[in-house]
Image (tube, rainbow, N blue to C red; front, side, top):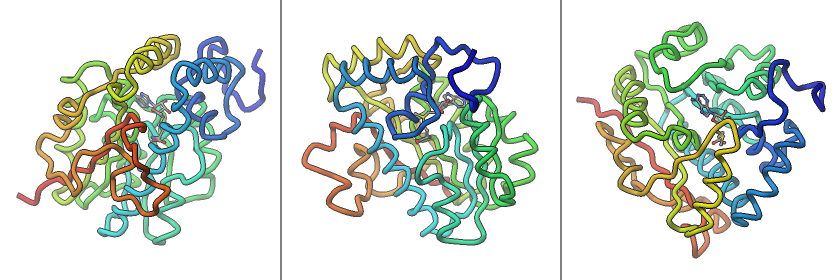
Length: 270
Ligand SMILES: C[S@@+](CC[C@H](N)C(=O)[O-])C[C@H]1O[C@@H](n2cnc3c(N)ncnc32)[C@H](O)[C@@H]1O
């Protein structure tokens, strides 16, 4: 039995889902009692958690605006999550009639709702897939029909690589996408780090082992290593609120409270 009609069949309603917990923290409604109970425990362990997830989402918004400003109109959003306010295709379509967006997530709820949201939209599509398999994603019908990989594309890895525990695997995933992109393409990455949260960071990471997506924090050096073969766009690797803040609300005196690094890399022309 599911506690809601929107829940796709075949899911275990007793296991919290990282995607639905994130949805709950962002004020969404596509979450279950098990997700809400988990979110409350996680916020008790790390009271900044709701702020952390919001600042991460704000980084994504600013990154997409930057990419549109430099003329990129094609987006491959990996680990796109359950649709929420400020989805990538909405930001892109508010700026240009020409954008193309492919959303990819392994979570059934995320893709079911993205599919509903995109009904009748010829410029965006949702694909249920594992972003750890770049070849499969890049050769999917969704990508080959929606995106022209001979032209610059922005690959978004926002708050998703911390679900890949192994550094070498995370680097090889990024390399798999980078290798297929045209020069002048961009890769956006944000990911959690735990040092600023001290012991509370370890507590919340331990809690996430109960979800479908255990969490791995990375320090600045591990995060920076993800950008091998890319030119970092200014300001380089920073805490997410420090990445080109647009208003005083975007960044305060303690950007490290975001517990997340963010950066954008550009595939060199030569
Ligand atoms: C924290 S949410 C981030 C959502 C969105 N990218 C954002 O920044 O607002 C992480 C999402 O990544 C998805 N995810 C985790 N591992 C994945 C994988 N291997 N392949 C595809 N999606 C994945 C989860 O299902 C979840 O929806």
